[in-house]
Image (cartoon, rainbow, N blue to C red; front, side, top):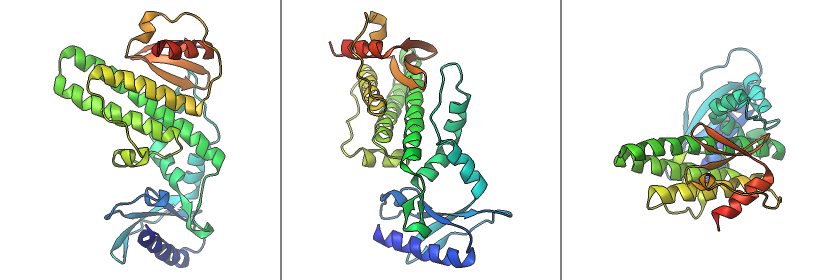
Length: 276
């Protein structure tokens, strides 16, 4: 890591001379303190005016430093999505937009300003909003995978079932990672960020039950609830395909295109029923 940070500082110094009014950010896994023996370093140069140039990668002491240029206006637009988390059940257009922009938002989440002692570009409030968007994205992805699993299982396509079950396992680990405050760095870094990752489930039904419990724990870590259990939980709510989801307007259970709205008390009752 220190070799890569030294390479980043060397190239950042060169860029400061070449583009004296352009801040330089280090982004990606290395900026988060994660690397392997062949990891490249990612630097991003911000331009306030004029056309954004095409920048060429550089090699410092055998370490590749990849350079990207970005307009400050674009970075400011992205940062605007991190002012608040807002998804309503009957209006998910903003959520769709944020999901499309999430890779770019992840770059912003990982960014450290080289001119400012390598301090994070985002403040804690912005990182918290990113965490909510990223967790909501991973939960929605898990819901889509469960829908696929249901169809593949019913069709008896066992090889495809195994593949999608593995994808669901990764999506759930990523949800746990984002709930713990990590950015979405990609599949290969998922078990590294997880620390002590949970082994894959042995069967589809076990995978669904595991996903349900772990996603609920991740959501409750971000949106804690203290309500007492309230009401009777119908048996069909306990079927393995239902996954929890949290929008700005409250809790819900989701399975394919079916949605059940929950009060905090009903969520607590559902949680209790799962363990009874």
